[in-house]
Length: 149
Image (cartoon, rainbow, N blue to C red; front, side, top):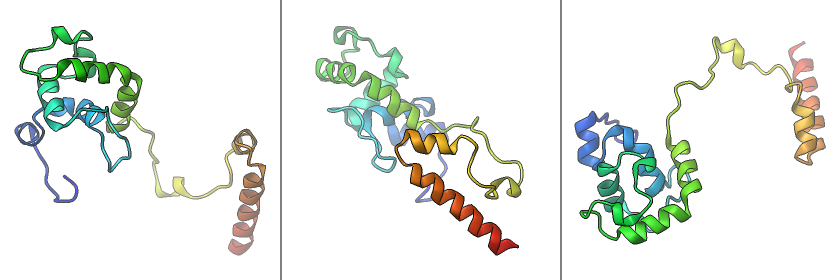
């Protein structure tokens, strides 16, 4: 919990969310996360997410047929229908909620220094219909270079 500067172990995550840590991205996918700007799956609340994901840890483990869901999960038919209708969104939301440790990072602070637009930037600007963005980047680069000299 970044706001409260609290680190939770597995027992702490289970106590707060009702699911194991490895299920948190799936939990956030169905529940939504306003801090990260994704809505979740319609009709899924904290209780439904915790009950379902404590039984089936990941979205792919949840039976497609609601009749195969564990009887302790209420409104299985409605939840199943909602999840299946939003399946691709739920997978996207889970990806967005997953912390990545394999993202490329810089080696030194100098790697962050602006060196001008990337070689394919002009093509990207044209593809977005914003060729003026490229010319503004070139002008900014030239202005910066003249200030440094």
